[in-house]
Length: 241
Image 1 (cartoon, rainbow, N blue to C red):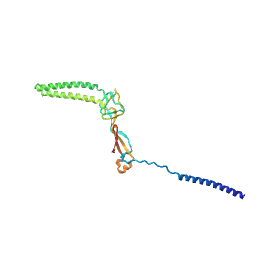
Image 2: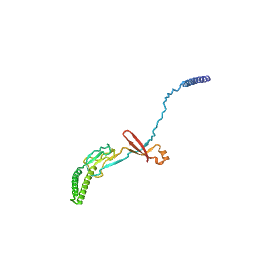
Image 3: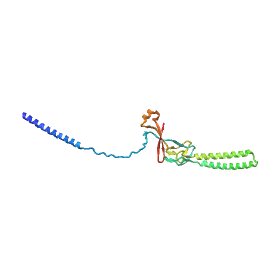
Image 4: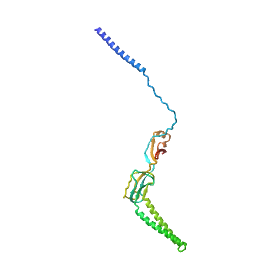
């Protein structure tokens, strides 16, 4: 019985010794292989040093709004004869937007121009008679006053006709046109919204350096950016709020 136990112990020790030797040999071989490995060569490139100017940029978040915007309204009442404006279109200063009917004013202007011509003729006759001392001074004064009144009346109708041709007061982009041909407008009825797109305003503007800005100057944490656009370039000009 004791011989069997001793034999079993010897066999177990031999097995464990073989396993340990195999593991030790494997670890030794792995260490030898790792010792023979060399890191790959690193490629180094060279370039000539040169001086460059880095732009000073600032990342910020804000609301983009037009620098100048109005609602174009009718100054006079009348019927819309022509709508030249198109929704979303870009217009230049002086471009025609809406034309109201001016048939009555044009007829009045024709009659007033005839009266003005007659007043000028009467004024010329009164001056000739006064030169010959064949009329009273009051006759010449009356003729001059009549001529001025006729000229003023004709000019008033011309201004009315001009105001019924609504034009863009400045360059910009139109909103949705709110009128159509044949519509009867009252004084002050909205026609279209006009927004200037050059320059543009960004407000309020908060940047990543707002904490440092507030610690240095509390009033500099909010600012407005004015965006000026041209055909090929855009520039930002920071304005402190």
